[in-house]
Length: 251
Image 1 (tube, one colour):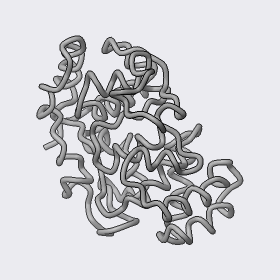
Image 2 (tube, one colour):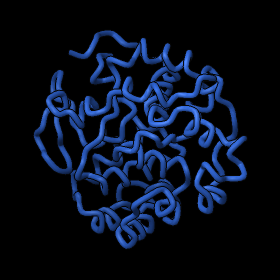
Image 3 (cartoon, one colour):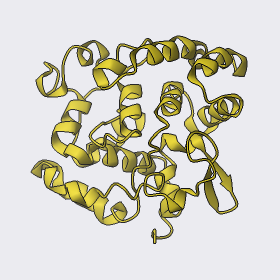
Image 4 (spheres, one colour):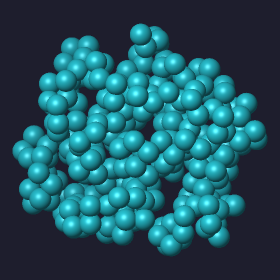
């Protein structure tokens, strides 16, 4: 994959794009027709991981620098300002399913019919019978009512756990968010980061910095040791765990 493809592959913005030849073009949400490679947000160029290397703890700095040397000039964090509602739909649907097989198919079916969240809530059960689609209407109604501003607000939405909340935050621009999924659990020990997945009951009551589980929670440990590189590191480790290789440099 080239650098744009590597940046888009893990990102929820991929649900808003359409492949046209060698290009990725905005098909849903704001700024339809925009070529992702020409936009600093969709291409991920707005985020420079090298800016935050000073926030990395010395315990993991060497391993993080190895990732930066390999991917730092290539992989960014793709976001799409103005499309937060559609990004929430995509994040919610990622639960326990294949992103590139099911979530992309479901979101394309939904967004092709409507981009209004209230209408998507009505349409979801007609797209498929998966539990993710069945639970989406209640989550969307809560999202529309609450208009969440932070992780604590997101975790109050029915069906939203720490991974979904952090996915949403990361791909709406919070680079300190760390979605702890199976890929991160497998790859994080390469950096010297170990721990268990975050516990929603604790996440709902505490910030990571003061949580009683911070010493054993992988999310809390990653956020503490990686700072604003945490989300980027998670993104790169997702690519690594998938066995995807870099072919060309981003110009």
